Structures are given as structure tokens and as C-alpha cells.
Length: 188
Image (tube, rainbow, N blue to C red; front, side, top):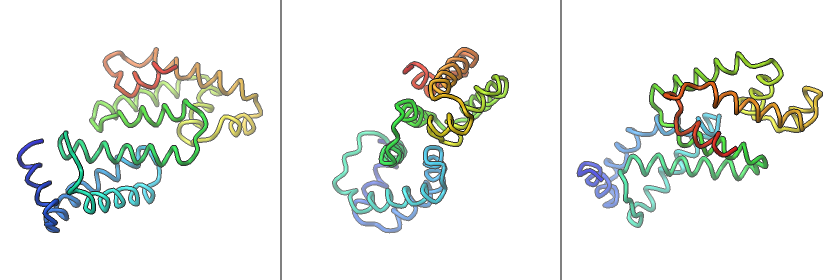
């Protein structure tokens, strides 16, 4: 941990409200944006981030932080998001892998470019495959719901999802393959 971060942490541990408020205001918006990548709900993301900051204020004296304060903050937010998603009782193991893989996605420009490439690949997929992929990962529908809505079997939905993920992995330029792609698609 850098000296500046250690100083902030020590002040927060010493119950310095100004230091805590400064820390809160410095990171709150970026944490909400980060959490929203997982939860797809600004309100839920705001609640989760506020809960984390309250937890941090109340427990900072006992927390052992071996990384930078910023890394600890984002890792904690990520873990809370994943726990919240798991609490929703997501049954499909690929959904869980998808959300966990998203947690590895840094918020860098090249990663947003990678997402745009994936969107382009989706647009070039056969209509049924694209529709199934979009409903599953953008609209968060279950396999059974997709099958019912499209009047196809669940097996067809699973096949289309598998083929879509494989196609994205194959077509994504090697240099643009982020940890997100590697973790998610190597799990297949």
C-alpha cells in the first residue's frame, strides 16, 4: 500500500470523518458504475456501494488490507455484487461464470472497445443465435423462458448459446481478448 493510501486508511481508522468523506466522494461514482456492470440496476448498485462504505467505516479498524486501498475497495465491491447475484439463485452455471468473468473486466478503454467488437460479432450472427445470446446475456432471461418465447426447445437454446460463445471466442481478435473472454470461454 502506498504511503498516501496508508495515511488515508489510518485517518479513517482513527475515526476522522473528513478523511472518510473525502474517500467516499473520491470513489463513490466509479464504484456505482463498476457495480452496475454486474447488477444492471443503478438503484441496487447505489445501495450496495453505500452498504459497503458503511461497513468499511464501521469495521476499518479490524480490516487487514494487503493490497492498495483502491484495489481492496473494488475487489470488495465485486465480491458483494457476485454474492448478491448468487443470492438471486442463478441456476445456470454459465450465467454465474459470465458474471464472475465480468468481474475481471478492468474499466479501461480497450475493454470497452472489446465489448464493441463483441456487439459487432453478435450482429453478424444468424438471427436465432443472436436473439438467444441477447436474451440470455443482455435481458437475463432463463433458458426455459427463451425457449418458450421463441417456441424452440431448451436444447436448441443451449446449443445456440454454446455456439455463440464459441463464435465470439474464435472471431475476437487475439489482441483484444481480455481476462473476461479468457475466463468465460475457457470454462466451456
